[in-house]
Length: 218
Image (cartoon, rainbow, N blue to C red; front, top):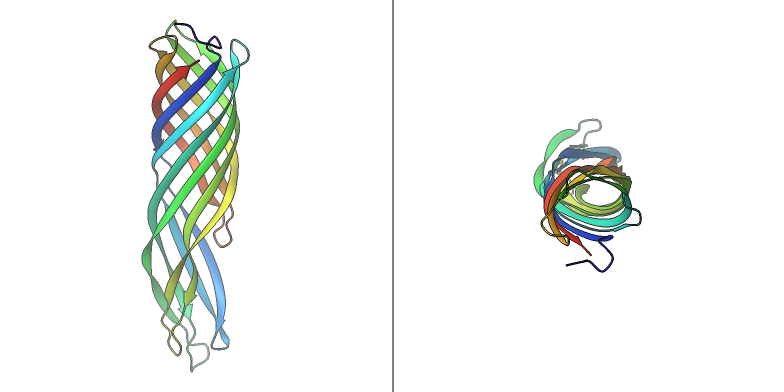
């Protein structure tokens, strides 16, 4: 069986894992009782499973270009602490802990790569790639606090913030050809960046990723 484009067009479909874990933090203040309350929060970002698919075109024997998409999400915890002024006495604040809440983190990443191909045997081929990455990050975060009137208690409000992290995607992919048209393979790469959200600064997106899947050639 021969392929319509002579094997120049490829489709890779992968499942894998994102290994990086990180923590994003935010500090904010708000006025109350003619004084200032301060809040410090953190949101954890865990690793987990990802889905990846990309399409490539080999315009020379050993060089090609591609575009791909990766989807990832995980749920961790947002928590924090607040210093709430006294409603009666000046400069007599209370330190309170904010109850931990579930916080979801999701990423939708689009990347463009230039790929170099190195045949190792008739069946095995190594590909190395590099290119820019654009990652739409959505993160649940404690971004406001309410204080019941006349108290020094604090109730956290969970909000959702999003932004686009720009980064780099660099790595290697190994393909084993079962036939001229179908193969299996695996990749390892760094596909990461960071983004400042409205209240969270330097939120890490992506990171070290690995996966396995199908390799289709047309």
